[in-house]
Image 1 (cartoon, one colour):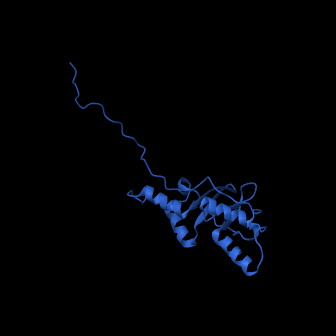
Image 2: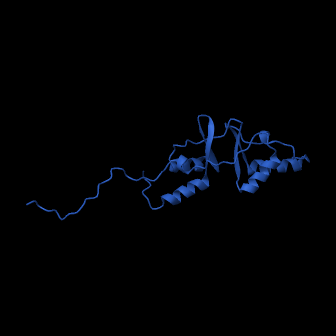
Length: 156
């Protein structure tokens, strides 16, 4: 006669520890509103208002990042056009966008990204991979990530 065990079935231990994503690429926006250098300032302003955004990347036809246009850039041009009494309807953003745009690595930890936002005093950073714009991370995305991670050990 065999010995019966009253322990019941044991649950298998899983070796995979569930971790919360901490990379910029996990929280970046990929459905981007982009602009082209030949767009008029007026059309960009309309898009900023319509989409409730404060700026966006400027790309060429190959989706390569060539600049950033912001509300501030537009406001500066509005002010200058009024001061010099020059209409702005036909002005393209090519001469008003910020060039030499600082990007951020999609593999960067979001806490390092948060520090980069503080140091650079920027509202958004584009993410470029293989020369192409693939995403954008904003200060708001960092806040959303922090709220998802709330209550967890942040020393990962």
